[in-house]
Length: 208
Ligand code: SAH
Image (cartoon, rainbow, N blue to C red; front, side, top):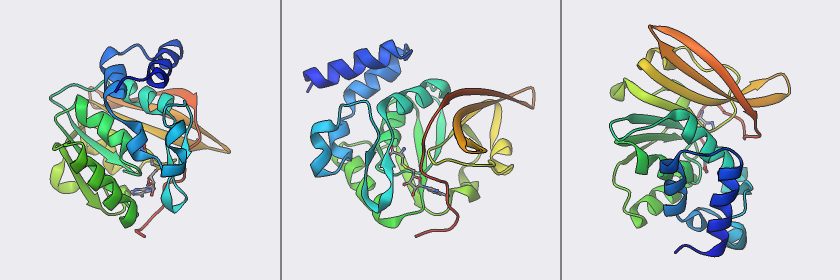
């Protein structure tokens, strides 16, 4: 259903520089209201982060759109996501790539997200309950990797787990600030570009 609030959100994202029509169309198609707690459903199409269970958050639509746009995804890509959370970002990715491999360290969140993927018939998402910082060795290499929790140092293994032209997008912690960073492997060297300041929950070790 394309209601007024959804149209308003898409226009706002355009004004904020989201110009990739495939990304905007994925945002239009995935019902964000399914991923937010019942008492926040009326704010599902506001351009704000919202609380979910276990003191975690569903990211702001602009940040989801921006990270997805930076990933420059196509239908042939295998994408790894660290931090399934509500599953909203995962679902957006699933419409744009071949397969999403998503890792979450909180079991209850992962189960809830998996139920929504079933409900929405998103069949190209594979999930894993684990500490995402350990990677997903059986599935390497990936074309794209996205971290959706604030990370101080991306473990070196991830730069080995992408091929040439591979991209990693991550909210990186630097002193007291977090910024979106895009890394790209070109001729086996890593380039780094820094984008918007953001606020993400922290990347934590182990599982819960
Ligand atoms: N993209 C998500 C954002 C979720 S918040 C969404 O749209 O809802 C970030 C998530 O990362 C949380 O669910 C948190 O539990 C998870 N997380 C944090 N550190 C992690 C780690 N090391 N491995 C896997 N998941 C992690």
